[in-house]
Every structure is written in C-alpha cells, then in structure tokens.
Length: 417
Ligand SMILES: [Zn+2]
Image (tube, rainbow, N blue to C red; front, side, top):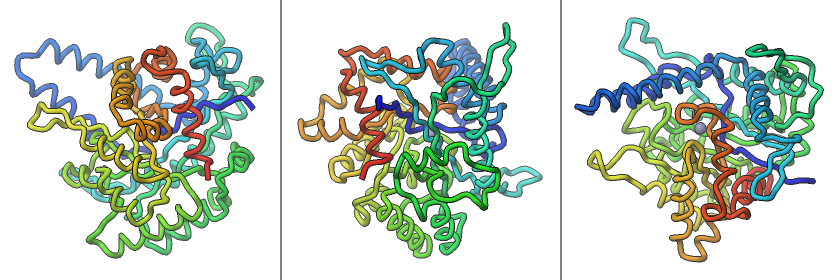
C-alpha cells in the first residue's frame, strides 16, 4: 500500500461551533497589541488590512457546512495541482491518501462570559459539533465539488476517489462532566476502541445522524484544550484529579492518542490560569504518574508573549524536548507554525543543536500539522501551507525527515502499539 500523508492537527468548525466570545477575545488582544504601538499608524493600517482580509478568508470557510469544508479543500488541492493524478508527491515519495484528524474542542466552559446585559455563560454542547462533523464526513464521501463556470460551483454525486480519510478526535473538558458520566461517555466512544485504521475506515461515512447509536471506532483520539479551563493535573482539586486519573488510566490501557493545545495563543478564558494549565510542566506531572500516555503536546509549545515585552521565550519548547527524551510516547506538532521557509530553517537548527541521541528521538516524534482553518489567519489557503512544506528543499529538510514528520511518525502516533 502506498504511504499515507497525515495532517494530525486540523479543525472542522463552522461559525456555530466555537465559543465566539472566546474566539473574539483571542483575536482581540492581537489587534489591541498593534494599536498600542505609537507612531506606526500606516504599518498598523497595513497589518489591519491584511488581518481583515485573512479574517474574511477564514470566515468564508467557516460560513460553510462541514461537508463543503472538506469538499472545498479537496477541490483546490486538485485545481492547483498540489494533488495530481490523485496523489501528492513530497521529496520523492508519493502519497495517495491524506488522513485528517479534525480536533473537536469542548467549548462548554461556563467561565466564558462578558460584562454585558446578557452575561449568562453560554452553553456549547459538544454534541452538536459532533453531529455536524460526522454528517459532514458522510456527505463528503458521497459528493464532490464541480466547477461549472467562473465562480459557479455545484455539489454533485461523487465520481472521483476521495482523497481524504477523516477520523476526528473527540474534544473533552472533564470539568463539564461528573466522573461517572465521563466514564459512560468514554465507554460509549472508546469501549471497543482498537486503534485499528481498518476499523475506523469501516465506520467512515457510516454515521446515520443518530448520535445515540454511535459507538467506538468513530473517533480516533481525544483532544484537550487547556486555555479554556481544562487543567491536565489539578493537584489541589481532588475530585477533578480523580476524574483525570480515571481518564489517563483508560487511555493508557487502550493506547488512545491524546492531543493537547500548547501555545500561549488561541481561545483564552483567563490569561493567568490559561498559561498555567497550558504549560507542558502540567503534562509532566501527568506523565510522571502515567508514563505510557500517548500524547501530542501541540504547536511545539509556541510562546508569543515576550519576557519583559521583548525577550523571546522558549521554555515550553525546551520542556517538550525534555519530555520527548524522558517518555516513550510523547510527540509534538508544528501546526500553525510553519508558514514560511524560515520556520523550517529554525526547526532544522533546533534539531541539529541537540546531542546525537536526543536528535534521533526528536526526529521520531515531530508531526506535521496545519491547524487549518485557524491557520487562515496567517496563511492564504491549505494549499499554501502544504506547498511550503513540499517546497522546503533538502538543505532545510531532508526527504527522509519530511517522510518521518508527515507519515511514519503520525502513523505510529495514531495506530502504533
Ligand atoms: Zn489547533
């Protein structure tokens, strides 16, 4: 079987799914940051313009239903020739399938509120997002997007092979569930989880709209989003900690892959707590108790907030490398980071700067991720992000390293024992 290309970190959300208050707060600080720099008005205008057009691009994707979302990405990958004759070629390797694991986010956190008249915290049950995503996958399998003329597209019964295999990660914030309810939910979606791609493939597109009838092997993993109030190791909260111990034990036993957001940006509910919960140090505590956890600590721990406003920080990145060294199943991904060749150069330098043994380990644990559609705030399209990876030449990333990042490593992360 030809190798598969994996995008281990993307999202499939439309405008009804995210908590827009957290979303706007997340974008807001960036705009505020730009405005507070004195004497840079024209630059600000330029940046705002770029930012506005990127935001519109993002919103025009998010206005779609989830099926269209997959159909649109597929259409443009083919139209631009990134996918040619049903395959993408990267560094001499040819990939027939792109495997996506859209990460669902549990936005049901009750602390996200405003100081306005209707300050009732919103309820965002993950159920609706789940139904929409699985309906979307079903429709994606059955239909395709066809260009009929300039700006004229129609969705028709599919004649072509599907490029994507799509296996979502379930979003969970344990704070939204009582312990017993959480265990019931885990049993429903992961009770018979096997970690087998064949089992997932059998279920792909088989969702009949009835979430009560949904079983194991629809979700391929679990996603955590600490900035909106999930604490990986709530050491001072015994009932919450007890839930997490049950959860981690369950995941170790069944070898379920976990992905945790790890950058100081994103949807944030409380600046101080968010950073504390998101820090990889928090995961270190969980790993000390559960060293077998299979965990992707995402975004390579990117920290945008500078020390004393100007000194770049890399302590989260360093901690992730340390955890990769110390634990056999810890991974990281470069989603929402690799927007230009400069990023890949810095990644190369980071890898090269490690002692030989650590370097080898690190090469086995880095995963390709796009963070599509969130990444549209910094990138024009899925094509763009992927092409940057494809075009990085061998002085930057060797072909065998690319293959590790986009195929061998994510395959082991998702399906390895
Ligand atoms: Zn993400």
